[in-house]
Length: 132
Image 1 (cartoon, one colour):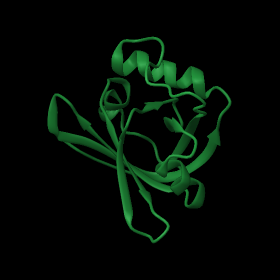
Image 2 (tube, rainbow, N blue to C red):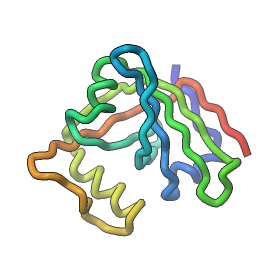
Image 3 (cartoon, rainbow, N blue to C red):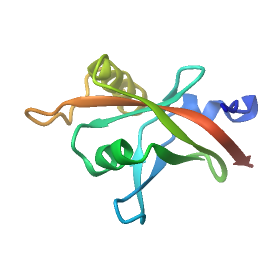
């Protein structure tokens, strides 16, 4: 069952605040990596390259957690636990460019590697907690 993001913390999804994505490795151990995030009104979204560790982990186990810390106040944060309900290459190049504009001010993602396939992931929030 989907849970709503509290309006009081919506700004954390709108400003360039980094998320920390938690996934599960094959042996069940946690893996955490910083990510760029946005919100489409229903799903928390992020983007990565096909074949990376987080991509492999999510394709094996769709349970994830994202903690987003306010850059202006590190004691204020939003944590979202949920499931990745969509993994798609469709529109992923446009999505990484949108995130590049948000986080870098650059309308084109500058770190693309040759042959890289971009992927967008949609997280359905199931448990939301916040502080600050």
